[in-house]
Image (cartoon, rainbow, N blue to C red; front, side, top):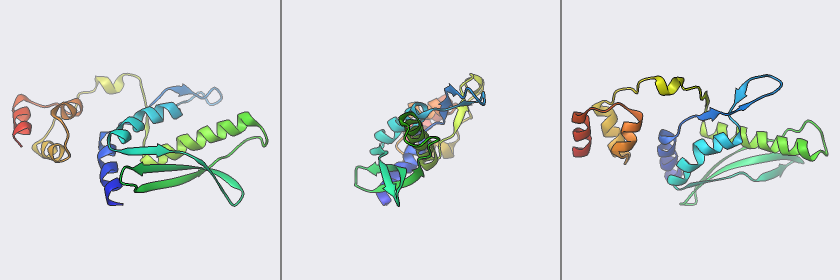
Length: 164
């Protein structure tokens, strides 16, 4: 599991939380739907040579979604989430249960949160980069643009980063 672990650590350092983009009509709360979770994680995972598969599997007569992270090396990490349906033999209920299991399985396995997309985060200043952050970023093969997207970087720090 060495290769997938290295790739997953790098991917998680590049991931952001999913944006809450849907509203529950009954509870009136917002949440990140399956597409928001996928948009937050799959491009970053793919950049790090990790694919996501979510097949349905049967275990002891019960149905589950297996969330499988597959690295190009062939190494995998997986988890299962039970598919819970509110009404048996109802396609809409089953589809809803599958979607919930996929969303929760992916979000849980990758430790992805969900944040309100209300502009508050965008208005907050970026944290300042430090020499330690710059060294870790360079060691992790991050570009200067990636570091600048996350941190406030001075001209002197830009030069330091390029010379590391």
